Length: 257
Length: 333
Image (cartoon, rainbow over all chains, first blue to last red; front, side):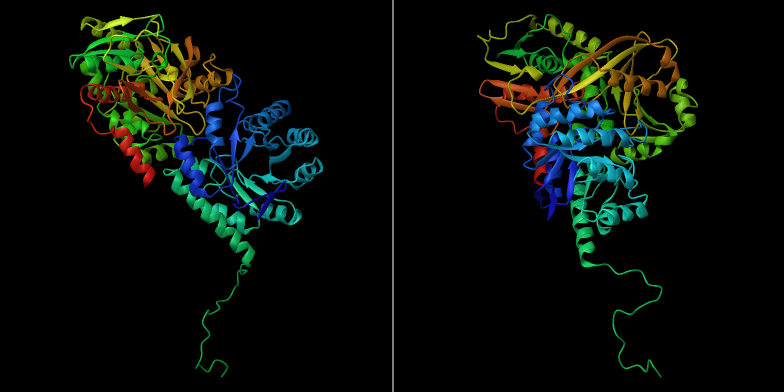
């Protein structure tokens, strides 16, 4: 079972809650996906105090664990403030930490990320940092106190899928004992299956489900793909061969004559 | 039949109209001192059920497809039937394909046809979608026209009304939106701007698709343009934020750089009442009927909801409203 900061979770799919056609469809998608964790953003909704409360209470009623995120934060200070607000609002020390460094690519500001992660870990938060596939940054995040890493596989919302598989492989190999969750860039279920086959512990996605023509059907499809990829990883896949090998032995032929 | 309509937003006005044409004696009570200030006042006024279907469910199209005819009949001269033009920057061509695959009632238009439809957009977009069956109106002018017409038809309007005084009516229709007491309702914040520039003219609403900042611009009289609208899960009606305004303005400039020299004559923010499925409802409880949850579709869906409410006032045995029926089907599918 997936163990994140001491919590065992039955599903290896984490789902975002933004951009759905309606909260009712979001609820159906969460159920269909089988997810045990949803992320929710606060930055924009909390302008005006607790004005987003009604939506947040809908999220609470989904009956799954909540991972608040600091999406849309561009500085350490913003991200830290948002995390503290989230802890108060949702009664959880979990925070998906995003510090955005580039408005166009939504690439993480890894320097700010490490700094914010250190501050939050010291303050007792369980930090889930949204990072790149850079190994040195990953080391720094672990040093700062993070016990989980969330590398991107492509820019947020791009639906490109894993664009640098060697980098993902290398990350998996360097941090064998750290839960690694691919966050951002997944477009279709086969992308999720691919990174799960590489041995990643879980995936987090939002746009690919929320903006699908049928979000509920797509949530179910991703749930299955994540399970399939995990099962395949555990079961040991064949390495590609240069030669054809018949799957049925051929009897009654003078093969060696 | 004496009916009290609470609320003079688009739901209240359309309900009053449907009631008075059925012979009811109608009083409209509004706590505000005039027609303005509610969510309807900040609406775009697009009667665009085919475009909305991109993110809305099927009942929005079914309940909204006759809205333009309704407004044309109730407020002659207010509706402009010129369709909707949907465009995207070349970089976001995928967004246009996505939009086309989610909607119906459109046809593809090329650069030449875009130039013919909207000469000021000539050369700016190579591909677009034209939704010819759609229409638009100016919400404020139309509400004023309907108010005037209802007054002439004998409807009694009370502004700055005390909400408590409800005696002497056979029925009441609650059209108070966010002020209604209903736990299922939530507010969805929307922010808008009104720009004025003589340098650009548009004949129809234009939607600019963008992966992050989709926007629409609805032309109004007097060289004015309504630019909208954000959708934020928040009940705050504080003034427009810097970020939202930057997004709306940069999208407007992406549509046409000449918007850079336009005057910002108004900014607004309001909270739209929505149910969890973002579909409207007519609920009947004893002598009170409530119309609510019009979300971002006030002018589009209020005629159908008002008709349904008026039918309930005069005939209790009507089946459940179409929105609930279609919704029930989807939920059990």
